[in-house]
Picture (spheres, rainbow, N blue to C red):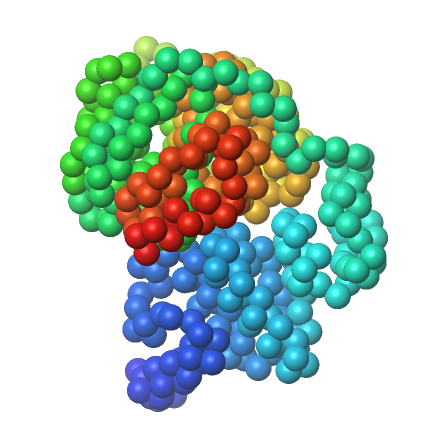
Length: 392
């Protein structure tokens, strides 16, 4: 192949890539197509690319947002190795535990402005939170006020045709928040996508209120009262160059039809106003492009979008990924409020404290199957990790 008219050796490129991957202990086939890799593997390839430049300064922007606990430990070993080699590291994260553990100095930003810079050893998590949100935040999670009722969803022996998901069975109750934990590649996301018809099912039965439904496509799933907030917000959640109104009403367009031809601008404006107020979305107006919003506000727009479809079952995949601690609290409160309204919520998360703090029960996936189910009030991170490694 040629680059800019200059011949390059594919063999040498592959050899050097293998050497870099070997040095960083990255287990990825150099000939693999990037889009076929899971998010965590793509993240590690990006890190390897930065290292290959022999950079003097590397900026890590939310590098662990798609990584499991084991992969985070691997990343920290790489960062420490780079630091020992004299490389300067700028590490951006909303995860305070990571900041305090990996950093020498910490700079806190709020609303686009500098707040403080202090040595990491002089800071506590509570102090960082206070500086970030501008006020005391005594609890990381809102009070659990929802009370699960009767069973509304039954899933029996669900499997994916083109994924490793197999024989997943569980129930969801009205007003319940069911968490799904597991390592990367365990089948967490596949459970949601197969339920929603975004992936082709290999088999299994889905019952809503005791009645068997198919959910063969997302369109059919929406009609059946399901909603899916996807894992990668920027790639599959938002329409970045469209405004807030379009992003809010896009899943509910049939309800705005007048005479089967035109859309009611008035009704769309009213519903978008409702979403902005109900979700506490910070914006200058409906015509603002959604990509101009913070990650937390983008996520609120998507939640508002789905609520307009009046779902009974909400499937949330990493709902607080890449969101600051203040916005996280608001998202948690929204989730609990939805459960209080009688919605059934299934929530995938890589953050175990989040699952323990928000959920009622936690389903643990391992190797594409259900490894166990635990009560969030009476379990521990150690028990969840043990189950997560059961079929690896």
